[in-house]
Amino acid sequence: MCKVAKKIWVWGLIVAIIRLGFLVSMAQGTESEWSVSEVMANPIDEKSDEFVEFYYDGETEVDLEGWSMADGAEGDGLIDFTGSGNDGRLGTKIEKGNVLLVVDADYAGFYNQWLVDEVDLSRVVMLTTIDGNIGNGMNNAGDTIKLINAAGEVKAQYVWDSDVGNGLSWENVGGKWVVSDREMGHSFGLVRLDESLEEPKILDEPVEEEEVIEEADNEYQLLNNIAEVDDWPLMTKVELEGVVSVDYNRLAADYLWIGDDTGGLGCKISYDPDVVVGDRVLIQGYVRELTYHRVFEVDNIHYLGADSVVVATIDGQEMSEYEDRLVKVSGRISKVDGSSWYIDNDGTQWRVYLKDGMDLNGLEVKKGDVIEVTGLVNEIKSGWRILPRSSTDILLTSKQSGQLLPSVGFDYQKIWSKIVNYFVLKLITIKRLNLGG
Image (cartoon, rainbow, N blue to C red; front, side, top):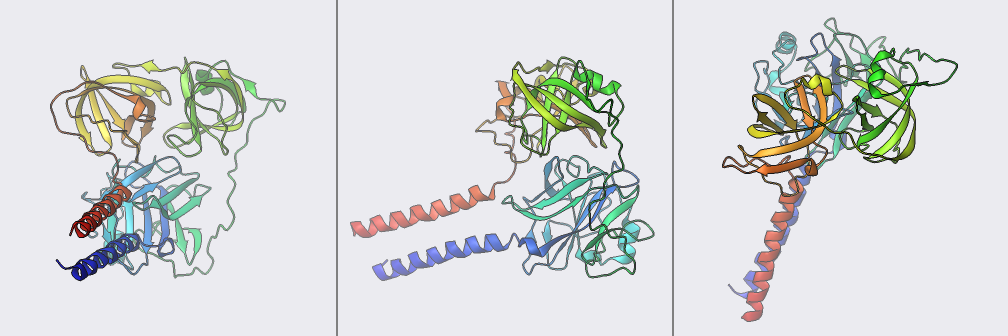
């Protein structure tokens, strides 16, 4: 190849790399092109009929493979919904003017008669999450929902602060969030961003929940341990001690967990408390009941000193006995389903769930390997699971032959980096050939 031809080839290669990066960026769509159009957080059947509806108005087709959706507590990757309730288009690609419906994995078509009668099904893309649930089970009384692309960028989000009622949805009508005025309480698949209501029930300002916090002489009631929290009425102001078992924002946004010999407690805090695992703390606040678990709303937190983290080793006990506690389990990997690993020990099976994006730091395990896992016990609609805090909570104790487990998540940035590195090496090789010639 002559020098002129080589230079042309090199410049063409550089242009191709730049163009490829541009196309990858464009294929994600811009934030302004996405809208949350409806949220059903409190359906008649909360086990299967939650949904979130998005509208896409971008000019380019977008493949949603590698995207995820999160509520205020947890995020999960999106995958094609192939259940019996899917009357929309198959696949993960979406075009301008299309509707994205994210449903529970167990959705069986409760809303579909409305969908078939009122909506152009060719414009509907139905997806679900790898975990099978929308976040951690959307909180009726208030939560956040986010659509996140493969690069980790938030493309659309909505926050609500009150429960609109069982079987009713929040709907974006003409740019205003209202309680759906439809007779059936929702408009599944029908986007109404350009419509207007004669007398919409608009909630421009957050609606404060009418909750009365019981006080005793304006003081917090001192509890002896975490187990005593269950003995007090909800919303009663209490204070108690515990040792931090999960760092702030580690497993859920605005949450940390504490534990003692009697139990564990998830604590929601609106600010970074500047404490870490192993710190003994005094917390003051009150307990609220959410859909699948209780949460301690923290008013104040005080550092008391360093202490030992309590970890319970469990065998065949009921997981409900260890809710919000840090536990240790061991067994042989019997099944892999997305980000869920199932481990067996003498007939007892535990589901270990790796949070989306967890870095395994090179750990490679196979089906049949024996592992020891430390993690937080947590319940969602699909059942109980154990959440490791990081890769250091997973210990490989015995290797066996079997299928290599997949990595968690799909890192497009790493793939793009490998592409660029490949072509850079090609350019260096060509330069050396020129010098040698």
